Image 1: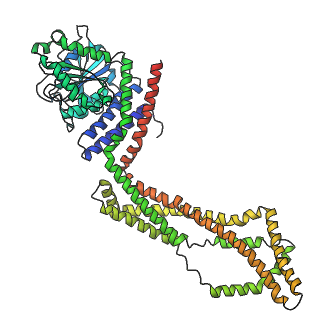
Image 2 (image 1 turned 90 degrees about the vertical axis):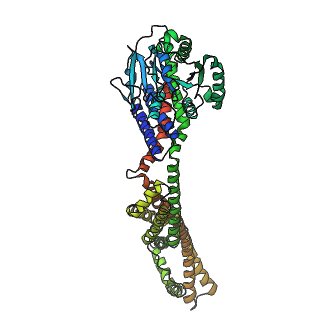
Image 3 (image 1 turned 30 degrees about the vertical axis):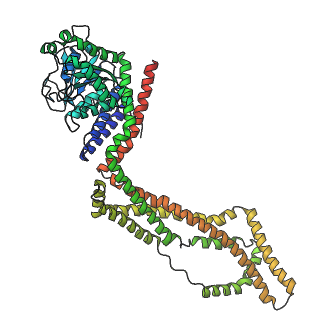
Length: 603
């Protein structure tokens, strides 16, 4: 991945995660996996991005969460000190996040690019029951008591977390929860052990955010027993490292109308411990924000594999397609080896042998001797050629390379087409591939791609074979000492054979037969040795040809086939890009966050 600016990197990662979320919804995810991805994207937008963009640590954000009818709005009012949040016995009354801040507080904290993702800020106050992708900011009066939390904190009241399938509520809730520097988890006496809110609690604890648990709506006398039972049944069921994130469990009994109407004066007994817990978590603000951001980065790095599990079925289908293409590639290569390469003669090496033998003849005045020897060998050369033709079967004509490859390509594509058709009901990828074959588009494009790659391969292999063949005698030409030694050795062998014949048998009519025979035998011996050298190079060229075939034809074609589903603007194109970009972006963001956090600690 190219190095992107921080804003570009956070935007890209948030967009990729948002795409994963929508893709998972199409695949019928039950909501839990979608929630994890939405939370990850919200952490990038609302937590990591502003930190890397040097947003001030103040204000901090405390977010009130809980199940339906738990008493979240009541807790929000205890935190703000006024009855700003609309308490209502109706479950799910609060349907979008609402932020409470002091009347004179700044609002630049909401100006960061991508803040709260798809949620739009209401310009005019609206009821908490407004069921839209919005959020609103409500200014509340200054707390006349000494416990004015809103000097450094924004208090958020959120929708319910009663079911993962609430497509409207849950994304809004997770956007606000990701923003939190501290969470207040609210559970009522009747439903403190509900399964889904507990699952949400576990998920949010994984982000490293400190959580204060408030148990509501019990009789005051029952509070100690309820706290003990909650700690055992709910917190005791969490992994130890997550349970440590719960910094306190408070009990707030059922409050009277008078206490609800004026929390600072009439509910201080329960309000002050809650304010103290939140205040401790916010001191100092820079450290609290650093803790929040580092926790968000840990969540992204440790959970990235589970985030990508949402597309596990897609990844499996892509891997199966890759394996099928690889299997076809192996058959393609084996057919080329069997039907063409194993029988190919590479005639350029025969020409190289002739050139090598010519090179070993004596130069200059020695050409007279070489010419004489050539004349002496003529009868036996003609006789040997006639005998060779008589006893040797002619080579079978070699089929053209291109024809063999086109037939092998047809077999490869037929294999892919049959398998795609057979599996078309298993996954959208196979349906997409089957449609590509049925329309002829995939087959046509594959043949066009083959034609382009084959032309490049032909040029490469021709150069390689020609270079190897010429190298046999060109290297000898560049080494005069070695060349002259070989020439001298060949001449000495001829001279010794002819001279030995004359000395042994004397001079007579029989020399007309024996001398040419001796000259021919020595020449055949030299030619045999030269042929061995040339054949060794021919075989080496055959092996290199196989490598070139894999590198310049077989592998590029296989890679093109593997990538075909991820081209043309399909969902699989975006999927492949997302699978590549998400881990890289998480790694880069983590590095940048760690570096900035370290500098802030030092300073």
